[in-house]
Amino acid sequence: MSVAKKFTNVLRALIISYLVTGLMLLFIAFLMYKLGLDEGKVNFAITLTYILASSIGGLVIGKCMKEKKYLWGLLQGALYVGIILLASILISHGNNVISTRGLSTVILCICGGMLGGMIS
Image (cartoon, rainbow, N blue to C red; front, side, top):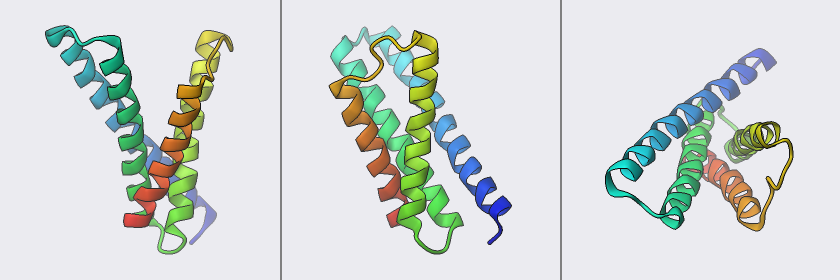
C-alpha cells in the first residue's frame, strides 16, 4: 500500500473520530441543559466520549489496513488525543493542560485506538 493511501486512511479515521466526538459532545450538552448534570458526571461522559471515539477511529483504520492493525490503531489513538491536547494548549496558552486525570485520559485514548484496531 502506498504512503499516500496510508495517509488518506489515517486522515479518514481521524475525521470519523472527530465527527463522533462532536456528535457525542452535542448530546452531552443537550443532557446538561435538560437534566442539569453535575460536573463529575459531565467529566466522566466527556472522557468516555474520547475513549469511544478513539476506539471507533481505531476500528476504522484497522479495517483499512490489512496488517499490524493494533499498531495502526495505536497510532490513530495517539494522533487523536495529540491533536486534542495541542488544541487545548493553544486555547489555554499552556496553562494547566496536563493533569493526572488528563494523563489517564491520554493513555485510555491510545489504548482505545489500539483496541479498536485489534478487534477490526
